[in-house]
Length: 418
Image (cartoon, rainbow, N blue to C red):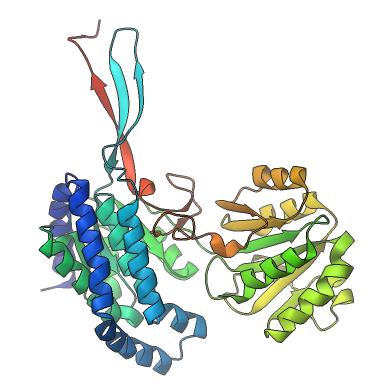
C-alpha cells in the first residue's frame, strides 16, 4: 500500500474510534488509563531495550546532547510517564461538563457543554514521553490520537504505543484510538496535514523548523509554539539567595528544553552584588555567558552579546545576560525579544510582581519561581499535549480542557421564533 492510502486508513479508523470515545463512561476511561500506567512499568525492560536501538542510531548520526536527552527512556522517565497517566486518571473528566447556563426572556434555558474535539494529530521529534502523555490526555478527553514521531524515536514510539493499545483493548476500547504512524517518510506528514475531513487539530512539538513546516503545509488548524525564549528578571527588591537558586535551576537543571531560561535580566541597582556570585556558579556549571556591555564590565569573561542573542533559543548551556535600568525596560525587552512562552520575576515588591503579571504578555508568567515549572505535569494538568503560544483557542500548557470545545445546549417548552 502507498503512504497516502496508509495514512487515510489510519485517520479513517481514528475517526471511527473517536465516535465511540466521545461517549465513553468516565470510569471506563480511568480504568484504561490506570492499566496503561501499570503496563508501561511492567514492560520497562523491553521499553529500555527497544530505546537503545534509537539511542545508538542517534549517536551514530551525531545528534546533540539535548536531543539525545529528550530521546532517552530511563526508569525515571518511565515512572514519570506512568505517574502522569495516573494523574490524568485522577483529574475530573471535562466531557459533558456544563460550564454555564442562563435563561432567556422567552423561557429558553441556554447552556454550554464540553465535548471532545475529535481526532488530534501530533507531529513531534525525539520525545518518546509525548507518546504516553498525548495518548492519556486524548483518551481522557474523549479524543482519538494519531501520533507521528520523528525517525530518531520510531522504535521507542511504536513500542510504547503497542503497550498502550493492548491496555485499551483489555478495557474494551478500540486500539485505533491510539495510533503511531509506522513510517518515517516525510510524505506521511504531508498526507496527514491534508486530511481535514478526518483530523480536527494538529499539534506539532519540536524545533522551530518542524513547526514552521507544519504551519506552512497544513489545511488543519494548528496549535503551536515556535520557540521558548524564556526570561527571568531579577528586580532590585529581589531576595539574592532566592534569585541565585532560581536562576541557576532555570538555566542548568535541563538546558535543552523549551522552558529553560535563555535570557537573564538584572536590575542595575543590584547587578554589582548579584552578578559576580551568580556568574561564578554559572562558570562552575560550564555555562557560557553572553553579556551586554554593562554586564561585561562586571563579568569580563563574558562574551559580547550580539543582537541576535536576545531572540535566540539556545537549548544549551549558553545564557544571554542584560542589565536593565528598571522594570519598564525589563518588560519592554521581553515584549521585543520574547516568544510568548514563559517569564519570571524575582522580587519581594508586591506592586512590581503584580505589574509583571499583568503586563508581560506570555502564556505563563511566574513570580519567585523557576521557568522550568511551565509544564503540564508540574502545573497539575496530569501531563500536557503541548504548549501553545497562540491565543486561539489555548494559551500555555495544554491539558484536558484545552482538548475540548463547547457546544450550545438549549432546553425549551414549545417555544417558536416569532
